[in-house]
Structure formats: C-alpha cells, structure tokens
Image (cartoon, rainbow, N blue to C red; front, side, top):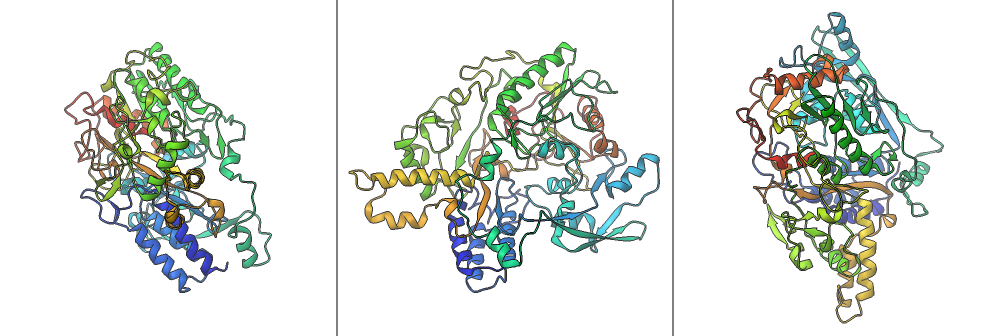
Length: 615
C-alpha cells in the first residue's frame, strides 16, 4: 500500500488535536515512583512520526500506521486506542493457544501449549515451554504485550481464558489469548520445550475477501476517505436486536442470567462452596461483540438484585463476585452493583479531566447550548463535587485549571447521581430509584471479588503480591467520535456568537481557533473509523493529586491458575473461597502487599470506595 506523505503529515496534525483529551499526557513521560511501566512521550512521539512522514521515512501506509499504533500502545492504557486504516483489514493468527499452570495454585506456574496441557488430566508426561524465538518464554510474552498498566495483567492476557471470551462476545470459547493474535508480528515462532525439542509455528494472515488488483486500489478503498451517509459502524451496531445466547460452556448451570451473558448468578454445590453464591460479571458494557443490548443497564441491575434475593433465600451466606475478564463498561452499572451489596455506604467517585484550550472553548460553548440534564463531562450543570452536595457556580469554577503532576486539570468532579440515576440506568437509592435491598444481604467480610478485590489469580511466575486490578484505572473512556460530535456542536455555537457583543472566540482569533480545535472525523485526510482516549483520571478519597492509574494496589491474596481452574471456572471459585474464607494458602509473599485494602489481620474493608473501581 502506498503512502501519501502530505495526507500522512496532515493526519498526525489532526489526530494530535484529539489526543489532547488524553488525561495522562504530561504524566507519562515522567511517571511517579511506584508506577511499573516505562515512560513514554505521546506528543513528542507524534512530532517524530510527523517529521519522518514529511521526509519520506515510511515507505508505505502500513509502516506509518504501525508507528502510530506502537506509540499509542506504549502508554499501556486500555482506554487509549486507535484503529488505523491499513491495520484492521488483515488479521494475524498463531494456532497455538497457551496456558500458564501451577500444580497446586501456589507453586510457580509453567507455560504449556493448551492441547499439551489437556494431557496432564491423564497424568501424561508433557513438556512445558521454556523459550520462544530463543528468548525466555516469560520475557518474550511480556515484550509483545500491551494494554494494561501491570506486567502480571499483561502476562495473563497472553493465555487462553474462558472469562475473557465471555467478556468479549458472550461466548466462553471465544478467547485463546493475545499470543494467538500474532504476537510479535513475525512470520513464525520457534517454540522451545524443557525436554530440548523445538516446534516451528507459522503465523497466518487472514483476509476477508480481496477484490483488489493492487496495493494502490486497496489503499484507495481502505484509507482514502469516502462519501458516507454520516453513520459509522458504531452507530449501526446500536440498531441490531439484542442477542439471545446460550449459557456459556465450561460453567455450571446458572440459576439466573442475562441473555447476552453479561451477568450470571450461580449457586454451586461443589465442595467448599455449599454456603457460597457466585455472581459472575464478565462486563459492565451494554455491547456484546457488535451488538448493543436493549435496556442493557436496567436489565443488568434487575438480574443483580434478583440474584441477591435468590442467594439469601437459598441460605447462602457468602458471596464471590467474579469480575474475571471484566474490562469495564457503563459506569452506573458498576456503581449500582456496589450499592446493592453495600446499601449503607455512600458512593464516592472523584475525577479530573485535562483542562486544555479546546476543552475550555467547548465548555464555554456548552454553557449556551446544553440542557441541565445532559451528563456530558463539560456540562457543569449536571456535575457536582465528590460530596454529591456542592455544584459549580461557573464554567471557570469547574475548568480550573489546576496543576496535577504537571497536567492542567479540572476541579475534582463527580456525576450528580440524583440526576443520572433513572429507570433506564438505575443506581439503588439515588434519584427516583428505591434503595433495594435496604440492608446488606451479606457481611462485608463474607464478600470477595475475584481478580479485582481481594484475590488475584495468575501473573508472572514469581513469588510476591499482584495487583487486584491490572487493567486501566482511568475513570472514563471517551470515543473519538464523541469528541468529534462535541467539536461540531461547539463550532456552530462559536461561529454563531462570533459577531455578538460577547463572543466565545473574537473574530480576530478565529484563525487560531481553527488551528487548535478538532475537525470532524469525516474530514480527516486519511480514514479513521474508531478510536478512544482516557478522558478522566480517577482519584482515591485520601489522595486527590495522584491518579489511581499510577498507584500500585495489591490484592490481599494471590493464587496461580491450575489446569482445573482454566477448564472449569467453578474450581476457581472454590480456590478463592478456600483462600479467603477458610484460611487456605496464598502464593508466598503475596499478602499485605503495597496498597492492599484488606490487610489479613482485618475482617472488614478499610476503604469501601475501592469497589467503585469496578468500572
């Protein structure tokens, strides 16, 4: 595929305006002590790519797009993503799913090819993998991973997972691990085993049809902007009927579930779980695969509430909330789930967005055009301070900016839950929604949250703690399409007031406005279909200056996956219950780690606000 250098240079210029909404730009080049990932300079990296494009450094569109993609991935932020024109047409596959297995849950795990690991059930002698392409297997898998701010989470993501498949598309058979998606982008992988043997595994390219005569016609079809109806693939997904999927394979029969398998309730009867209920929540999103669930948040809330009553009626006194594979989603779904289990606790959320010039202009335009019930981040009329009592008297009061680790930031802000809690998106006890249950159905010490609080599974083969939440800890993902919509609305308001007595932008400043303000995605010089940024940094109640994304927060206990845990999730729940309820062993050195919120000597959580980070 050829590269049009002029369009490439212009593309970087326009994308930079969108990247200004990323909340961590100034922190990433010099992250605080305790942050695990290497520093990166996103804006500086874009400058370098733009210069290289201008001098003809990139010989084709694929190399140019790969450079931008690699830069974005260097932030290790699951909320920051971009889909570039030459990268989504081709898929890479490696037909060798991997698993990381411990013999008993606390012994150091080894990596196996999944099909080899299955033979361990028959006590067959199979050899673990010790190297890939001549490099230690752990080091190689870490080197090709991205998307999480924690090395253990990145390592886990390379392996087959029923829960990850359930999270992505409602089908537990759908995720074979990131390694199988073409890790390293090499033509083949030489896999070395402990017994001295090697196996060469090819990387295959998948293409959905190829009606093109040459690279130029392919580039024109994929990368040259086309006339459209104004709809995107994201819009069209909303028009698809809600899915009706079967119960997931590998799991026991749920007593209640949502048709898209976004939330499932179990009353297992296996040993160690007789008094325990399990609520599996693979996602808080309303979208499963490419389909959006009708009234998804309201249905989610009803099933969660009904299951609590089902569990207590069945005599269950303990609860495991399994968030394995959960990558977040609709914020109110997670907040409501917290309130269902802790109805006596107020919800605390606190966030800041990056207060840059484009946001200032858009916010001042919003003052003129947005209704009070519009919950978009820059509408001060729908925002409050974290106390849920105090509003903002002016746009300046909300905008700031305040210097937070070098980031020009807004005031500390929260959604007004009384306003945002509705029948379509309920938060128990807020707005017109009844507090139901009105009293806790389970004691706090009898609730554990697998993967997020307070037990973590898997990670690198080393002794010591592991973060409970290894994915992104930002408060809100924001699509580039949403930025585009805001920019278009704000541009109209700014233009309409330009000749008034109180213009948002004075006529003599309009050229500068056009230079710095985002243009519509449809006007980009190269096709950009989807992308997103982390809009809001989240903060703890006792620390309003260090975003949670950069704070290490260890789980109380850690265990490794056994083969049974991978094949049968019910055994994972039994393992969690054994460790957290019955005094079972944790991985040596994994308890009382930095930032652990439930020290082992305490029977109740010290910081219930941590549960709010489930989204």
